[in-house]
Amino acid sequence: MKENLPLNSCIKIIKAKLVKNHYSNHKDIEITYKNLGKKNIKAIKFEWFCLNSFNEPAHGRHFYGEGRFRENSTELIKSNETKTQYWEDFSTDANEIIKTRAYYIVYQDGTIWELVEDDFSFNKTIQQ
Image (cartoon, rainbow, N blue to C red; front, side, top):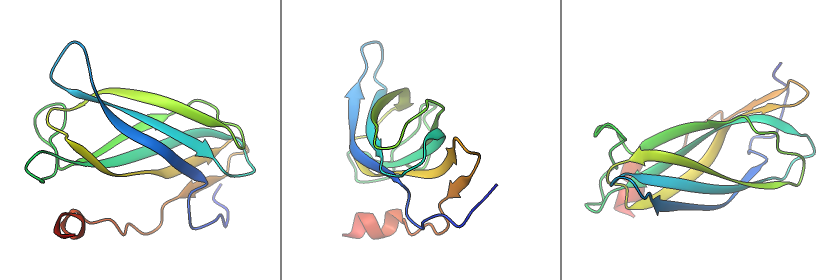
């Protein structure tokens, strides 16, 4: 059930950092985020964009990719609550996170928020 929800996500990314894992050359990501909204959230789809050392879109876990990575969270996050989550083995050569965001949110009451316009472009980011 989609409602007229705000254009901007109620999820604020507090911190996103790359973490070297202990068992391979792949990178993990740690994302800390907060629910700024008034409703509890039961699921979130996240995406993040990374560059490698050559300032090119980073590769994924299977040595291909275009710098855009996606994962889901199905942990309940209450209004005004902050959480940290880890996703393992997402990239082989990521060196820098250039953007992290929630693009799809399912609230506990069944309503859905979805990113409408995608204003992100690697070309704009790399040229800046």
